[in-house]
Length: 377
Ligand SMILES: Cc1cc2nc3c(=O)[nH]c(=O)nc-3n(C[C@H](O)[C@H](O)[C@H](O)COP(=O)(O)OP(=O)(O)OC[C@H]3O[C@@H](n4cnc5c(N)ncnc54)[C@H](O)[C@@H]3O)c2cc1C
Image (cartoon, rainbow, N blue to C red; front, side):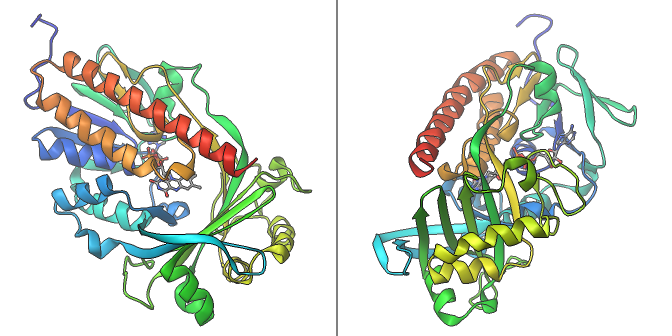
């Protein structure tokens, strides 16, 4: 070891971004004895992400291993997959169990597993110094650590500072999304989506639906929600500029959150539902607060610079068809903690971690592009 090497026994870690990737990393590092502080820009609950996610095994293992949740308590399950024709008949399908959860159910468990006195909302990172690890916030404060973890999502300030050429690329389509209490729809619609992972493909569209935990996290029948995602390449009269203009007339960057869609846009979008199977038409029309997100691809050429590393969507964004964003965020955190544990020197740990996660991130983004291209042709 040289004089500059940092031993890895107990690190002071500063995490910028307190969503999925920040919390997975924070929990994993704390479990191995490191001192971790998470700094999050927003001050309140993040409602816009309260929708469904496919419950990948690494996420469930993480929650179980850290005593944050019994997987059965945060997941719903379907037994079959079906692609419906416009008249509602099953065009193709088959047996295939799937488990689902919700963004808010996972976030709540992670947040509850991370101590309040080390979670600092209202802190926006505006700059970093990688070689002498420190983060500066918008209010002028500055914190130092042995390691900085940037978990700031698609528009990461730290990534833009370190890798200004790594730009998210619009994939050419958006996802309209929403959730509906299962009790708000007729029995036949509820039955379809609570037991079957259901799809409908049409020209320029793909829509899918599945059950997720209720708003309070309950997975009891009668208390769950039905979640839908409608991929749309905006080939009709609505362009992206219009879709991303919210009810107050503001142009949003990549998404319009629940409750803020421009009503005229949503009404026009709903006219397209006339050609969809009835169960999907009902599901979408019964949604109180639909929202829309642009789909992006993002890759980076490096995830580490000196003592700063990028995790989660700050580094790689794969299209949602891979259903991999949350498990990738968990994997980044878990493998970082493992790499640090298995090396006596921090730089060596970061180098090993980076080479594994770069390869994984690139693979998953490529898979997302292939899947998206085949669905949205
Ligand atoms: C339509 C759609 C469907 C999806 N479906 C799935 C699915 O089925 N399964 C799945 O696993 N994933 C899915 N995903 C992806 C998943 O939501 C993301 O991969 C995951 O949430 C990424 O977490 P993150 O913590 O890296 O980023 P984010 O959730 O974006 O969090 C970044 C955090 O950093 C904070 N922040 C940003 N800038 C700063 C700053 N300068 N200073 C301090 N804090 C800052 C933000 O406020 C935020 O809290 C889907 C995504 C989309 C768009």
